[in-house]
Image (cartoon, rainbow, N blue to C red; front, side, top):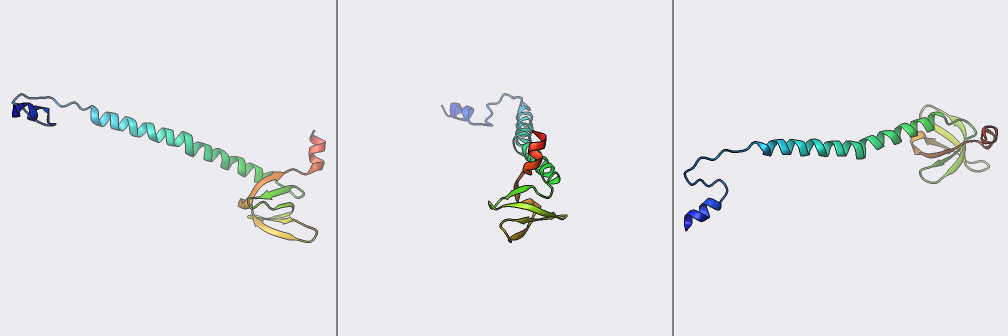
Length: 116
């Protein structure tokens, strides 16, 4: 009776030789590659696309365009520097913000009328 219990235990030997299969590492490697591919296509690739769209939006921005910041401030672009943009938010209020703080660029109305 104790032989039956030992035979069911993992790694137990009842005197006969058994051959081990090498499928454990192969399936583990396959799963690892699969999860890395899923991670790349679902997280990294979309982030790169958003970054490219943002850089294109910022590079096409010019004086007179209306911008919305990530904080919700709306203003008209009056000056563009290397890393910052100066916007006019009210009659006499001017703010200098970083380009990374811009959420949306709304084109100047006269350009939209000419294009459309």
